[in-house]
Image 1 (spheres, rainbow, N blue to C red):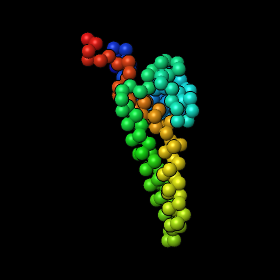
Image 2: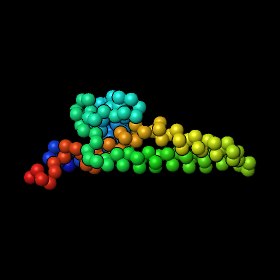
Image 3: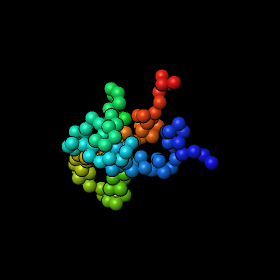
Image 4: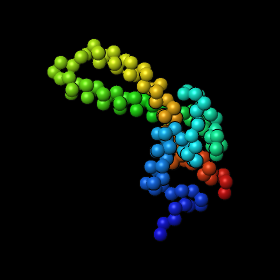
Length: 138
């Protein structure tokens, strides 16, 4: 029998991974699942209102969230372009596709912004929990 925790820290399991992914995609705290992490669409609280998890753990922490936003924007963009080409071949509406592409690549990252932050926090929390012991704490 494998214990669910090691020194009070959860093992990496499918259920824990799914729970963290769900919390990221629903803009919830990765540690406790609380909602209300954002005061406005682009303004995030400094810490969780329930468990007080500090969100920006170090300078440059949100670089991962920016990467998640760029990756998601490009994946959706390429998928939509391929789908448009497939559905409209042999005469794709190039002008409309260019206008749509510009609008999409400007607007989608703004829509996805808060999700990218909570997805990044959940990903980071899965591999590096904020309350995990450090090497100095021996």
